Image (cartoon, rainbow, N blue to C red; front, side):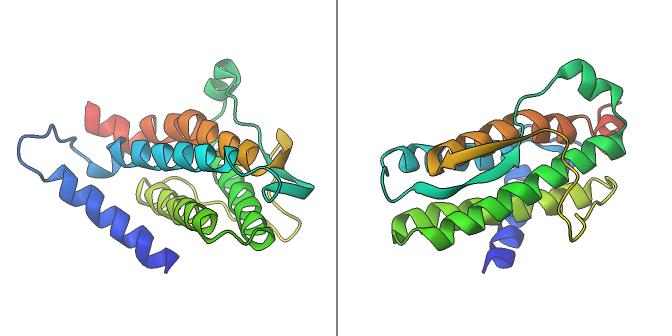
Length: 183
């Protein structure tokens, strides 16, 4: 189901790009409107999780990527290092979301979690389409240098929201193929 949702999202992105009257980038995959949609869904999930107190507290904290961006350090990294950091972060977020889903029973909250898991898959497809170096975490886990520990569902979605707004947006907007489309 999540795979079909991701393909559906990519299809919607292309259809939105071809709508008359909308400004269209040279490369539709570089269009950040799909990412903006994913960011909005993460923010909605965070709001929903804030209303969930006891059921959404975690028995053990989850490891998540550091969502803030040190712009000077980010600029010093090459595209491969940036892609690896984002893909590792997305992997950590998907692991945390899967663990969260298994620990709560509220089906409405499951819907938010499923939507965001599908969005992470779609972002992965976008990254592959951008010809960024692909990175798969090893069995020992990803090599994310800066991580946090969160102990609530709302904190998890806040990190997810900020990670998308920060590192994912920077990576996509500055991907070499998108820069070629601008020039």
